[in-house]
Image 1 (cartoon, rainbow, N blue to C red):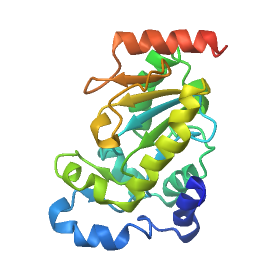
Image 2 (tube, rainbow, N blue to C red):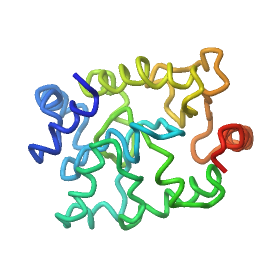
Image 3 (tube, one colour):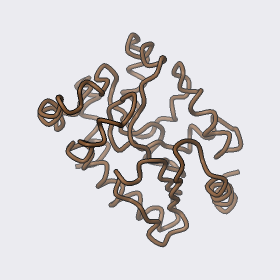
Length: 215
């Protein structure tokens, strides 16, 4: 099944957990101990993953003060459900989300947040939000939707990076993705810092954008 069709099943049904994950998540709930926020639509990716020129790989979405506003708003939840189409700009207009995305746009897209939102996608290994990964990391690779994400990374994104079509940046938790090597490609970057981007990563992104006429 197409990866985006796989996730649009949640949008069509208005479900906050992928049907393939339900049984496993129930069986693992004592280990997870309530760390996942299931009142938010799933977030396997944000931004135009189908067409993005830069893809940032993270562990999973985070929960913050702005999350409560999303949970309480049918309109904002619908914005997140639309993200599952894979062609929507990054939703930085959601309360609190611009605080995270503006530095991304600053360092990777010369501060042009609108252009960044149309060209950068965030790809999450785990689609469910949590405060941190401390407990979740022990069960990450047991969740069926995680297998789907890993498959998309290997079968679609890594080949696209090797062919020069995208810049693929592993941002934290690359060990959970199972990608600890650049596979000999200058278009696969291991950004090995807990937050933000290394100077080397920023320089590589800037050079790549110049090379591809994205300035």
